[in-house]
Length: 142
View 1 (cartoon, rainbow, N blue to C red):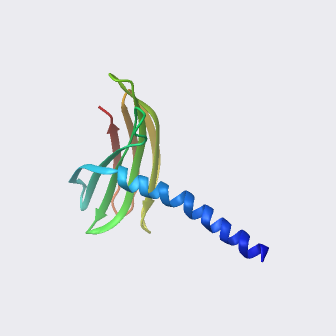
View 2 (view 1 turned 30 degrees about the vertical axis):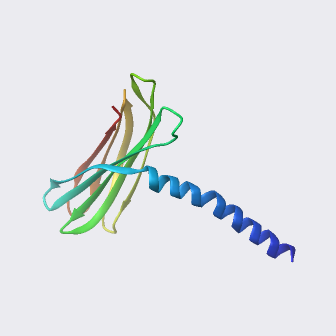
View 3 (view 1 turned 90 degrees about the horizontal axis):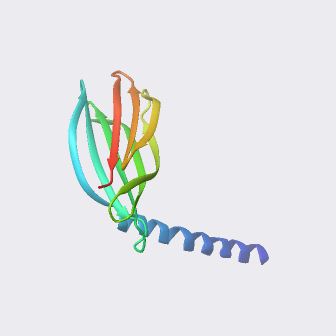
């Protein structure tokens, strides 16, 4: 009986913590721009930029840029750069930046570097497979 009660309580706590976080992210992250470009022979990239206010009562802004890479119409990689910015009423400043990526079998991702300048987060890396090409993402808060 105790095990069932503990399991049920754990499930309720887990659901109560994760559902609001997911809902907040889904509601607050809005796409603001999207475009397609050719980055190498046979490789196209779909870029989507999202932004959302992380807290309605603060001057903190969160956003991310997502790049999906396609080779011969098959998705081969996804790279995401996310960043948090502060805004004091006149100047935006990068607080933190991070990234995530995934690649299809037969492709590799290497040499990732993330850095910031003022109100911009930058990422560079390389994707290799049948074709090798540079990856470059940036996200600016203005």
